[in-house]
Image (cartoon, rainbow, N blue to C red; front, side):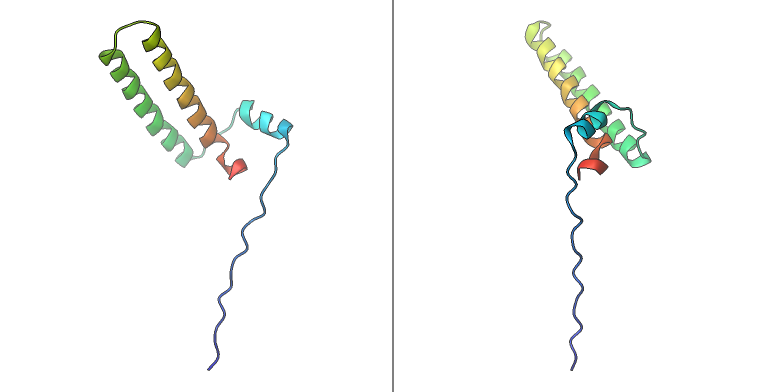
Length: 89
């Protein structure tokens, strides 16, 4: 009886990006795919909802402002993750 050997796929080599390439990825505008745009839209809706909840549940002041600022920063980081994912996977 002959055994059929399974062909194992070799994972793609890791791509190392230079610092200059990374800076370009971070700051150059990108056209998002339909899937990326949908995921980003879903995240945007979630972040808007959480921001509205923070405003409704907390008193105005420096802590509330800091919480909202951190949500905006987190959304920006999510946006960056989605827009450059094909270069950093």
